[in-house]
Image 1 (spheres, rainbow, N blue to C red):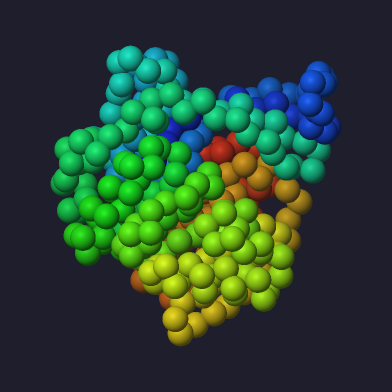
Image 2 (spheres, helix red, strand yellow):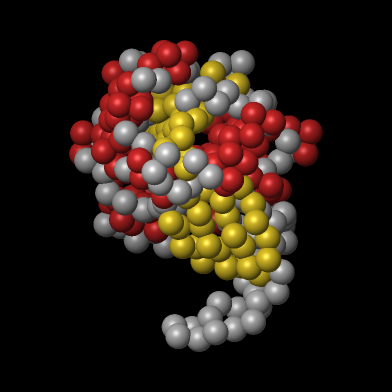
Length: 298
């Protein structure tokens, strides 16, 4: 199995279930409270590991119980943690998540130690970059660090997958190093200025990203599925029909699963179908990493 390097965030998710989201200034009584390991980078690393990937994870946590528990959890998942670093002066990242009766979520993140991941940390992880076949990264760590990681991996000839979440702009040069970008509708609009509302606008947004220098584009469209486009191919892969209870990690599981499928040499259509199936399973379960399926579940 080719080696997958994931670079990104590690958070502890604190989740409250409620019938509806509160209005501004309103207090409502929620239901159950859960605490789960999360963070987009960690979620994607765990999803990839559970689905059979050989995963190394680069992250930064605080010197606290949340950070200690997170790294222990990665080890139990079989993830290489040599470059899971500890910042002695900053708390671990946390996310406050509200989930309504329809399984939709609202999330506020306090990034903490995730904001302390530096380019020097990446240079100190040279061996992890050298060993990687695919590099998966998101935008919950500092943008200069993300852009440095993408350029570093790209110049080393690695296939780099960027999940541009949460939505933020990146430099024009960064696109040139991307093998694949995987925005949702909101992120695609921020990056291209095109509101994705149907098949035609999805194609326009994908074309705009390809014009920036990305080799492949997958737009994740929630319940509508995923739209793939490259210079010579396009496809719409429908989503699996399921009853969602928590969509928090759907995109992260999709990206982790997709990376595993591509690492295994799957063609684009079966790779996206594999990822869509994994994401569909995840939304039927509560939690972020807790919802990621194992290979046998698929």
